[in-house]
Length: 73
Image 1: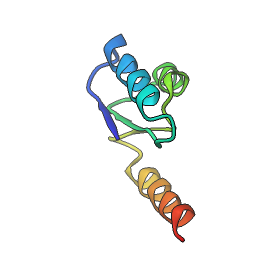
Image 2: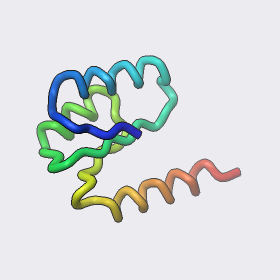
Image 3: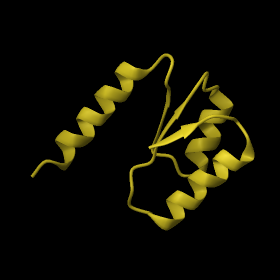
Image 4: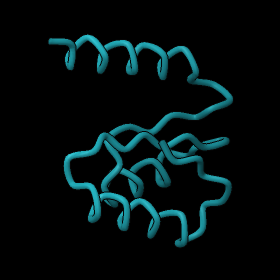
């Protein structure tokens, strides 16, 4: 899980590096006021999910619950 503090290119690069190092990982990005263009950039960089931490905590919980259920033996 990555927390975006800024919309800088550095944050997007961190996602790329993480995706490259761990290609099978589920990469979840949390950001403040996550705009649609930034969301798209995160997904293009390799994020699996993007959530606005100020508005979408319930959606994050649902996604995590779904991931847990999908990976259960």
